[in-house]
Length: 193
Image (tube, rainbow, N blue to C red; front, side, top):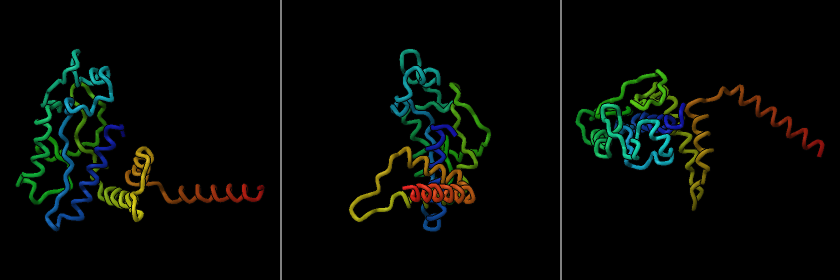
């Protein structure tokens, strides 16, 4: 999974679980994909050369706007978010990823970043209910309040922890062997000390 796809997959999983937990009360969760909105500056860290290679800016550094291929202005990108918040078509539907004011199709075909059209469909692992529940529970654990302060986490560590536990759970037998090995190593160190 690319670094660009990971946050999106996590957002979709949150929408799936939020909807499962609160749909009965009329609260629905959505993950709205606005498209690539170059003018917001969110892609600035990639640098002009990289953004040019991705077809996001022209040779003068101006954003390339091509809504048919997912490259949008800020107002065009906001349309799907407004659709999620206001459309009566979604009154009984939730836990989905939205794109271009519609429900995204599930597409498990790995697609490379393309200068013509960035990949933007949702993959089935991003809507898996078990992964969504694990992500939610792990997030709750990471946000435990300790009377006067919130647990502070290194974002890289938190992302790795979330991925390992929510998206790619490890078999317990592997975890058990590692723990036993560590315990045996630690016991050996204690005996020699």
